Amino acid sequence: MGSFSIWHWLVVLAIVVLVFGTKKLRNLGSDLGGAVRGFKEGMKGAEEENTQPPPSHQQVTGHSIKSEIEEKDQTKV
Image 1: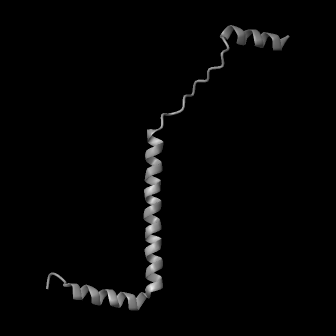
Image 2 (image 1 turned 45 degrees about the vertical axis):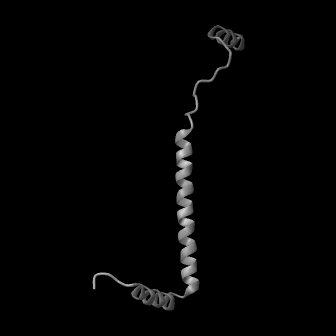
Image 3 (image 1 turned 120 degrees about the horizontal axis):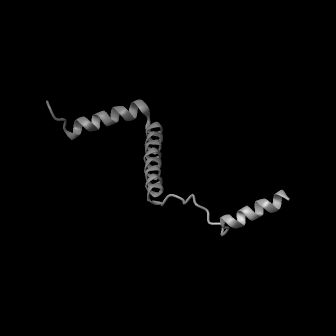
C-alpha cells in the first residue's frame, strides 16, 4: 500500500485530463516552461553583471590644477 504502480498513476493522469482538459494542461505546461526560461535568463544576467568590473569614477581631462585656476581667473575678468 506504500507504493503505487504504473497503473495507479495512469488512472490519476486520466482523471486529471478529464477534469482539466488537454488545452488547459498544455497552457499550464507552456507557462511553466516560460517561467523556468525567464528564471534562467535572469540568473545568467545576474552572473554577467557580477563579472563586469565596476566603472571607474575618475575622469582624466588632461587639465592641471594650475590651468583650471587660470581658466577661472580668465572668466572672472
